[in-house]
Length: 335
Image (spheres, rainbow, N blue to C red):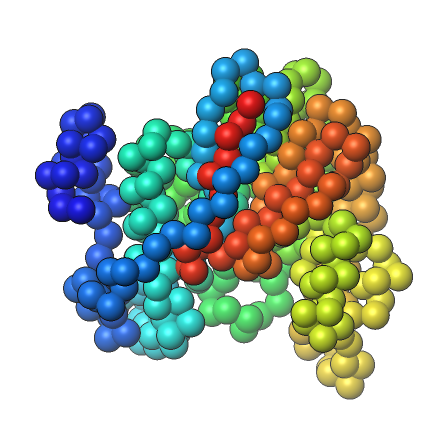
């Protein structure tokens, strides 16, 4: 579809500058911004989904997660550019699929929901990418662990590590999303975004969520890491050779069996999955409370790079969307 056709499709309502923000080039392995024709025949893998949430008026959204953009330039230095070149080999189709997803959402008038890892690491170009995308259309978002990753697995990821990038990310997300906790109401449905990128919740987030419940509106929760549900946890454990399940809030009897190398020096113990994904008391308290909330109608998340649906509570099912960088997405009808 060329530029003129797309403008016509959007009813002429978009400025040319706005179109530029989604008319994205596909990065080649050499870092150039030219279109790679080998991607032309790739199509989106869209799964239709209907969620009865009690909306005042039905509406639709496209749920995407884990896009993993790998942009960098000389402003970030040689090390970051080398990282981008290496990571691109894993996510070479990411730009193409993201472009298709945004175009599809706009052409059908869908709200765009992104539940984290839009970028693969922090860089000037990646952060600019976030900012440019959120200017076009209507968005709901939560951040992922890679939004805070400086060099992908090179350091202990905790609140101190996250603080190094939070201000820059918040500036990019702007009014679309407070990167720690956010609420936005659409047609009587309260979409609440909560940061659980390091497998935990805080008591502050719990108190904020309680305030949202007091509004009396049906709630759809957005987060990056799926919350613990028994079947999905078992599936992930098997697929990862028992090392870990990549979920938030797994019980101690499960996380205690995660991968652990006691021979690592104290300063390197954070590399053990049993340490990274340990469920602390505030996290378990948050999840136990959440299961009891009748206003919670659904949880939308990603992180695991596969589709999965499982009941989380009596009133809410959790929907894990597949990897955006392979074209996976949910087209959701909120009833």
